[in-house]
Length: 617
Image (cartoon, rainbow, N blue to C red):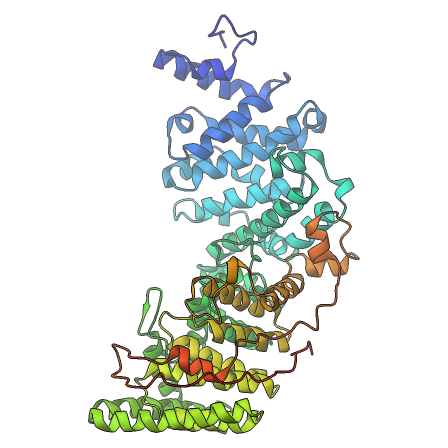
C-alpha cells in the first residue's frame, strides 16, 4: 500500500489511509489494507484493529467497510490467532482475536444484509472455535455475542444451525460461564492475565474495578449464551436438545445478577420453551421449575409477565395442566387483581378466565383438582361475582359497607397495638370481607396490614400472598413501599435471597420518592434496617456465590471481596419499625377517583408494636 502522508513513517498506515481525500484512492487503499493485513507480521497491528473496533462501535450501520472486506479480514485474523500461537504471543497481538470478534458482532447487530455478508465471508467457523474455548473466556464472550446476532436473522440462522455444535456449546457455556470467569479470573487477583485486565478496565482501574467489570462480563457471557439458545428454541426441532432436566432446572436461577440491565436471561428462554407444546411437557415435569416460576410471577421486576405467561400456557395445555395446577393456582390467584402489566392489558381478567376454564374442564382421576385448589379458584370467582353485584348497589349501601369495614379495621389496629397479632389478622380478614371490591386503596392497606401480622406469626407464605395482593391492587402497580418491605422480609424467612433483595431495593427506591414521613429517606440516607438486609441478600444472591463456595472462597482484595467473599453475621438485622398498623390507615386512606371512597382520616397515631427480630431460618 502506498504511503499517503509524507509525515507518517509507516507505509500503508491505516490512519493515514482514512485521511485520504480522494474517495477512489481511499477505497482502493482500504480494500488493499483489509486484504494484506492478515498476512503481515509487523508490530503495531493492534492499533488499526482497535481503531476499527471504535469505528464499529460508533457507526455499526455504516456499509463502507462491509463492502471492502472487513469481515473476511476479521475472520482471517481470528484463524491466525488460533493457528499461530507464536504470532499471537508477539507484541500485542493477543488482543486481536478479541477485537476482531467484537467488530463482527458490532456490524451484525442491526443490519441483516451485513449479517448475510458476514456469513458469506466465513465468520462462523472461527467464531465457533472461540466459542469452544480455544483461547479464553474473554474471546468466548464476544464470540457468543456475534453468533447471537447472526442467529436472530431468518436468512442467516440456517447457516448457524448447520453447525450442530453451536447449540450444545452454548448450553454448556450458559451453565458454566460464571464458574469459568470466577476460577479463571476473579478468584486470584495476582494470576489475572494483563490483557484481560486492560480490556476490562481500559487501564482506568485497579483490582476492585477489574472485579466489578468481571462480574458484569460474566453476566453478559451467560445472558448472551441464553439469547443464542433462545434463537434455537423458536424452532421445535431443537427443543429436545434444549429441554434436558439438568439444564431446565437451572434456568430460573440464571438471572444475570444486579449487573444485568436488560436481558430476560433464563426466564426469557423458559417463556420461549413454554410457548411450544413440545417444550411444556419437560418444563412441567421438572421438579422445582414451577415453584421458581411462581416466585418470579409474584416479583416486581421487568420480567414478571414472562413467568405469568409460562404458568398460563402450562395451565391451558391439557397435557400439563394437571401437573402444575396445584402449585400455580396460589400465585395466580394473588395476581388476579393486576389490571395491566406492560403491554399485557387486562392481565388479571386473563388469569381469571384461565382458572375458570380449569374448573370447568376438571375431570376425575389424575386430572382432578385438589380440594384446596378448587376452593382457591372458587373464592376468586366469587370475588369477581361480588364485584359485579356491587356495581349495581346504591352508593349509600356501599358507604355503609365501607364504614363497617373501617370500624373492624380499627379494632384490628387496637388488637395489633396490644400485641394480639392473631386477633388483629382475623379482624383484617373480616374487614376485607366487608370492604367493597372497588375500594382498592383501602384493600391495599388491609392486605398489607394482614401481611405484617403473618410475618410476626412466622407465616411467611401467607405474608407473601397478602403483600403481593396489595402490590397488585396498588396504583402504580408493584410500588406500595410497606408491602414491598414486608414481602422482602417474608422472602428472607424462606431463604429466597434474590426475591428478597429485589423487593428491598424497590422499597428503598419508593422511600426515596415518598411523601410519607415514616418512609421518606432522611437526608437521603437509606434506613439502616434496609441497608443491612440489602447487604445480606447481595452476599446470598451474589452472581459468583456458587462458584466461590465450590472453589474455596474469594482471594481477592477490595470491597467486592469484603462484601461478597467472606461470611459475616448479619442474621440479627432488625425489622423495620415503620410497620405501625394504625399509621397504615392514616397514610393510605382517602378519596379515590375510581371508587367513591369516603373513609375518614381521623385515626390517631397508634403506638408501635415492639416486634421481635425476624431471624434467618
